[in-house]
Every structure is written in structure tokens, then in C-alpha cells.
Amino acid sequence: MKNVSILQGPGELNKPTYRSCFGIPAKCCSVSNSTIVKEVEFGMCTVTCGVGIREVILTNGCPGGESKCIVRVEECRGPVDCGWGKPISESLENVKLVCVHTSPENRFKYVWKLLRPDQQAIVLTNDTAVLEVQREIRPMALECDTLDNNEIVASIKFTVYTTKELQMKRSRPPDTDAVLVFVLTIGVVLCIFVIFVLIFIIINWAAVKAFWGSKTSTTEIHSELSSMRYKDSTSLDQSPAEIPGHEDDALSEWNE
Image: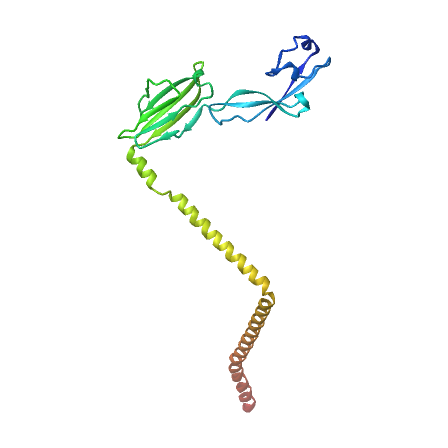
């Protein structure tokens, strides 16, 4: 929300008692001989594109000592391009489309166009906010421009599928949803399995500890035996090499 401070001078308070104050009677305003600061907040716009409405909220000087009070509802606007929209209703024979607008509907001007690839759009005769279209053998793309004082304030496009395309779209199951459900199911099963394993370990902690202790001692025994076997094999490999050395010493002594 956006805060706005508005100053009221002493001279303004001498005006008629029932003047409007932010859209509400003057009796809702604080009257004083000093300057009054009115703080106003603007609520969120009801749309993200085109034209919508928002609340104007008074945060200081509300009647009855309230901290906030709604002063009025005003028009707000977003980006003109609203992209691709969806029909408000559709059947296998026809589609009902609606332009972007606010109440009252007749304060805007509406221009419907049939879009054609690489060609100029065809302006339709319908000038109301709602358009009912019969499905054809080929898909169609339609666009509606909403104008206020000959200025485009919103533009939205629609795709009108053929009857066969709509039937295929309705009968074909969404692959993304199926994959998502499968992944979620696997994830839930794995989580439940891990939880049960943790509960089992906590309940049988003594047995688990003894099991891992025995397994560790067995591993240490195997490692010691392997080291002893390695030492024995090393000593056996070295002894034959030492024998020729002793024989040479004995022969040298005999020759002398």
C-alpha cells in the first residue's frame, strides 16, 4: 500500500459543513483550528493488467476513533497487454468470450478483431464486451481491445479450438499431473520407510549397538590376520635371497 499525506489549512475549515472529505461527509473529518494531516493508503489493484479497482483507505481522522476506514473505491490500471485469456464458458459448438472491463460496462468501447497470420486483422462488427463465437473447422485467434476515451487500456487474446481439438484436449489425460502424482507418491513412501527405520533403531538401540560392535571387532580381527599373513609372505620372499649370500661367504673362507 502507498501512504499519502494531505494537509488541510485553517482557511479550508470555514467552508460549508457538509462538504466532502475524500468522498465521505465532512462530519467524518476532524475539525480544528490547526492544520490537519490526512494519511491515505491505496490498496492493491484487483488486476495485474488492464483496468481494475482499488480501495482508498484513510489511516488518520476516521470516525469513531477507528484506525482505518475505507474512503472510496477508485479505478486503477496495469499493463495494457493481458496476454492470452480463457473463455468464460464453452461447449462443443460455441465459445463465449469477454473483454477486460469494470463496472459500468457501457463506459468503455470494445473492438473485436479476428487475427490472421502474416495478414491484417479483421475488425468484427460486435462492439459489446461479450462475444459468442461458433466453432469452425479451423482454430481461430481473436483479440479484444478495451478503449477509454479512445485510449486502449486493455488488450486480451483468445484461441478458439475446433470441436475435434477440444474433444482430444478433454479426453487426453495431462502427462504432467500423472508424473507429479507418481513422484509425490514415491516421495511419501520413502519418507514413511525412513521414519519406520528410525523408530526401529531407537526402540532396539541396544541390539543395534551390539550388532555394530561385533561387526567392528570382526573387521578388526580380519585386518590383523591379513597384516600377519602379509608379514609372513614378506619374510618368506626375503629368505631365499639371503641364502646365496651365506654360501658365497663359506666358499671364500674354504678357498683361503
